[in-house]
Image (cartoon, rainbow, N blue to C red; front, side, top):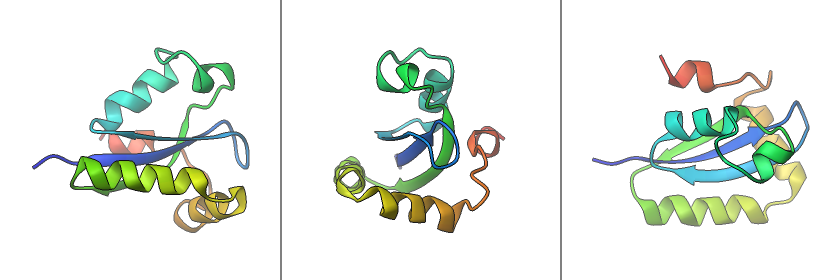
Length: 96
């Protein structure tokens, strides 16, 4: 069974946010952290994994990503704060 991940990266607490979707969260976050992904995350130094969700199909993942992208910033911050109040970098937890 394949899993898909909707994730939020941040530049710092309450900083710039980036929402993405992937089938390989460890690899994708590694790429962002090391600036292998040119563009927004590289330009604005958005490298901290602060939130992610797991779903079982690509269609649901893409739908959820689009939904989160339309949310007001306040709602996104509340989602992060509820699940990760210290804004820890969750990357260390997913590579174990």
